[in-house]
Length: 295
Ligand code: SF4
Image (cartoon, rainbow, N blue to C red; front, side, top):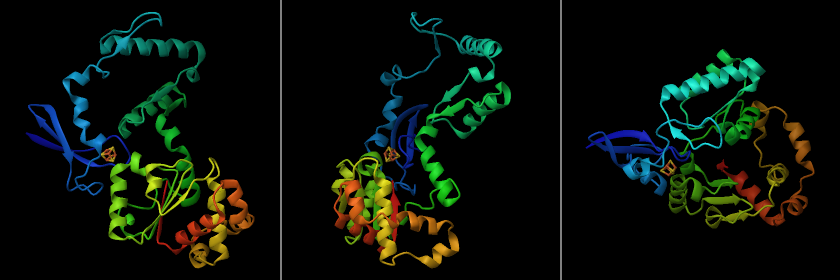
């Protein structure tokens, strides 16, 4: 039996796995004890990863190209040569008749960086269209826009170890317990080690994550920005903002101060549908820090 190091492909926690193989076949999987994301733990999804490679499951997977020349036909297995020639001819005919912007590629978010490069080169460099996209853009575009606007780069400046050093975790709109279970185990461990750790969960849904919160803010959908503005309003009012840092490292703070001036907890309580006192508590816990915000 051999073990090969890899990464669980299901969610963004990025748990390390050891894939067990015998005679060229996948037989099992276990958590990689040396991997810093999970230290050997796996959730149900990760620990059943190897089952997707089982013989009886393979019939449900796309292992060969299939082709039909009109929608009424049944798709039939075909060779890669025929499939690729067919696609190339269809693209060529369409481009010749209607120009390069008449075709598009919508590719998988699970591809590797190199695969993206090749598809982008094909679309932009060879065909001459910008019509190439993936589901990863729909998934992350607002986050990327936010990171670039606020931090100057598309990368959150934090890491999993920060959970162990935080005094407050502010979780907005994420059901971490369900969606990122191994990360949530880490949060539970941190809470067990330090019962003083404050967990604030903001979510219109009463999720499993919300059950574990010290403070749960079940806001009305779409009112999160008003809540954040109110929290900053409280922090400014109470002098809990590090102005030396802000003056040295940020721009536009005066405009932000003007924006949040009207967002009193009382006014925002009506918008968000949560008690004023809870908004104030959330702001104070957040400001006392060190706080890690997650979404
Ligand atoms: S938390 Fe579960 S699904 Fe996510 S990477 Fe880890 S094992 Fe995979």
